Every structure is written in C-alpha cells, then in structure tokens.
Image 1 (cartoon, helix red, strand yellow):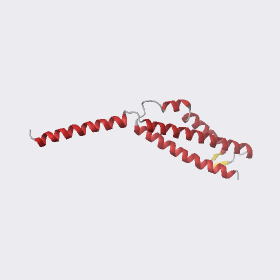
Image 2 (cartoon, one colour):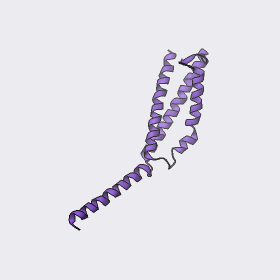
Image 3 (cartoon, one colour):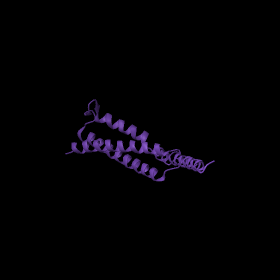
Image 4 (spheres, helix red, strand yellow):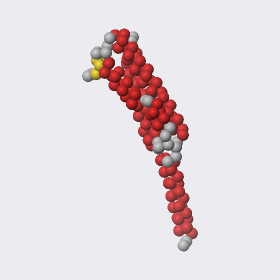
Length: 135
C-alpha cells in the first residue's frame, strides 16, 4: 500500500468516528442546556396560559360574557373551557417531569421548544386582546 492509500484509510476512519460521535451527541446524549431552555419555556407558557385564563374568567364574570362571541364561531365560555382542557392535558406536572426524561433527543427538544414558543406567542396575542377589552 502506498502512503496516499494509508492516509485515505486514516481519513475515512476519522470521518466515521466523527460521524458516530455527532450522531450520539444529537440523538443519545442528553443536551442539558436545551432541556433547561425547554423547561423554562414550558414554565413561562404555563404561567401565561394561567394568566390569560384568569383574564377571560374575569371578563366573563364582569360583563356576563360567557355566551358572547370571542371569535367567529366560538364564545368566551367555549374558548375558556377549551383552554382549560388543553392546559390540563399539556401543562400538568406529569408533563413537566417528562421533560427530565432521558428519552428526549435534541431534535425532539428543539421541536417541543418551537411548539411552546408558538403557543406563547398566540397566548400573548389573546392576552393583549383581553387587556384591550378592559380599556
């Protein structure tokens, strides 16, 4: 074998090792910083959801608005009930503990974080809408 062939084999082995390490890091190693960010996003979204629910509840009580339309085809009462149902399904303590599970890969964590960010943004819009109703 020539020196060039040995170098090619060595480079191939190094590339394979790097690929295995990268795969392990992305899919099998627990990304601590990403999990902490996910848990923070979860906590912030849960808190905002509770705040928005409280705003809607207060509005319903203050203006007897349970049967008034909030959006096309959905009343304040229906929206609040839907929010409470989704909140109990998605933001319970069991789900928070699941975020600590070792089964979450980096792509899964990134996907969950992105979903929570979108939910947070939507909740901010509803929060803003509810606050303008009080003006």
